[in-house]
Amino acid sequence: MASVFLSYDHEDIAVARPLATALEKAGHTVWYDQHIHGGAQYSQKIQQAIDAADVVAVLWSPRSLNSPWVRDEAAEGRDRGKLVPLSIGGVTAPIGFRQFQTIDLGAWTGRGKVPRLAHLLEAVERQSAPGENEASVPKPTSAKTALPRPRGKMMAASAAGAMLLLIGALGGWMWLGRDSLPVVEVAAANHSSRSQAAASDLFVKLGSLAQIGQAKWKLVDAASAPTKPDLIFRTADLGSPGQPQANLVLLDGSDDGLLWSREFSFPTGGEADLRQQLSLTAGRVLGCALESRLAGGLKRDVLKLFLNACALLAEASYKEPNKVLDLLRAVVAAEPRFTPAWGRLIWADMSVFDVASNGGGDVPTATKTLRTDMAKAREADPGLPELTLAEIKLLPPTAYTQRLQLLEKAAVQAPLKPEIFAYQTIVLMQVGRMNDAINSARRAAELDPLSPTAAMEVILTLAHGGQLDGARTELARAERLWTGTGALRDALYAFHLRYGDPNIAKKYRLRSAGAGFFLYLDARLDPSPTNVERYVAEVRKHHGRRREGTEGSAMQGVAEFNRTDEVLEWIKRIRTDTVAASAHLMFRPAFKSLRADPRFMDVANRIGLVGYWRTSGKWPDYCRDPDLPYDCKSEAAKYA
Image 1: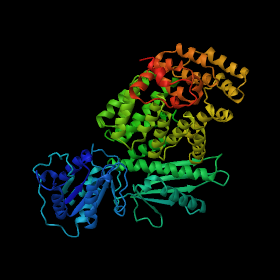
Image 2 (image 1 turned 180 degrees about the vertical axis):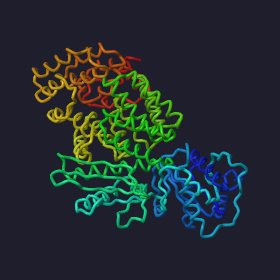
Image 3 (image 1 turned 135 degrees about the vertical axis):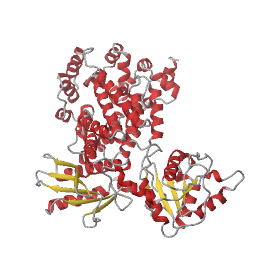
Image 4 (image 1 turned 120 degrees about the horizontal axis):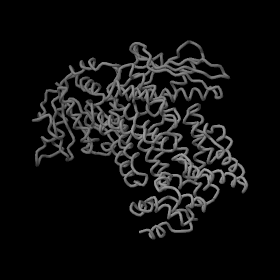
């Protein structure tokens, strides 16, 4: 019978406790550090526990990486040849421990089932197989005894291999490969030279993605693949040099069953564009398949729906979230406890809510739908980070402090959730912290490198923050990576509408673009008094009669041509909540002249920004502009 010593940092107790419970339920004998009695020497008792253990399991986390206790205990396990490393929070094992295959528990926070429990049990059994250690380890008095908070961080356990037999009863489609990492094969669908080249290119590009570096799957080509890889990508190049076209399918390696497929065709693009898009989409789909696996697996028909939704949600225009809603609703109807689908559904609902709030839909209906789905998602997982984001979304426009506090809390709960940092970007722009917003946008893109939408947000946030050279650099990169996606079209339109070539904005214009759109671009191309006046007159004609959410956009156009008095008069006639909802616009380059006018502080005070700045002590970036003709703090003091 094997004994396992688990080393963890005491701040990871929320993960260690359910992990210990799961091990006990599997038949393990768990030794808690409660057996270190008052007056006992920690180092002596730890040494005795490690000596008695057959396996030393270490839980690497952002906290334990910096713990000398955890490193010492892990080194003992390594040097004795009985180390089983685990990780949470997306961390990589420190130097000296990277030669060992780590069992990645992902972003698990201790809620729900222990991910990859079968792999942990298998690793413990394999590690202890050469010869069981008969040394005894104190047995706990109760499996439910809470782990104490002091520095001691160890548990010892013994394995029961029969638990592995229960895996088959889980049902549905799951990877059950022989390796602890899922094996992914990349192969050509036929023997043509073009398909062979496409498969080779996909293999290389997939191998360079961030997920590979974090050891989340094992990539092999057809020649070196095991008899039955867990997943198979097959690609066929069906195009010609002038008309690139390809197919990509994802198959279940156990029986070659189809899980996902997509056709790629870029009549106006090049072959390199097509292959880049193919590889990035493949990586996105593979990541979602892995997420399903970590959550316990899905039946094949449900998995197909989820993978299609993942790909569409990542690639679709942010104005087109309805494309994935039906797919996600079908997934949660079939698997009500599958939280990855609930998270994406809530996020899509929030996108619909945003579009409606900006004049593109029915706000009451969008609000009702969001609240209904939130209630259902809360039944599946009360700690779902997207629920916090949705609650923030429904707060009043002027609740800046509450929004940012909840976002900080959500970031602590789920530090690897890119959606949290994407939303944080928006709220930071609302209070004028543009540099912080740029950093949050970059963080979201780093956490989700396969999302064109995240990449586009970096571009636009850079532009809104006045860093146009950086935005152009990122846009040029995005055009190489994300050819053909709705997100790229949105970025091209939004960037060139305000900051780039107006003629490109015309190319990607919205169908609903009216006379004001063309007059605005004419004024940008030639900002003569006549052209500017024509545009302002058109905007003035519709003032007060626009759809809800569009006043801010029109106001931004007028501000761009330095019509500060008109903008201030306009703001006076708009409801306070409408002005607050447009706060993120006021810190863009177009409003520089308005911000330079001390009367801007009247506007900021009206919508609660002055109170936020004075209370938090976090002043907007523009207050540090050396050309600003007034001192922000002095002006703000007038409203105390």
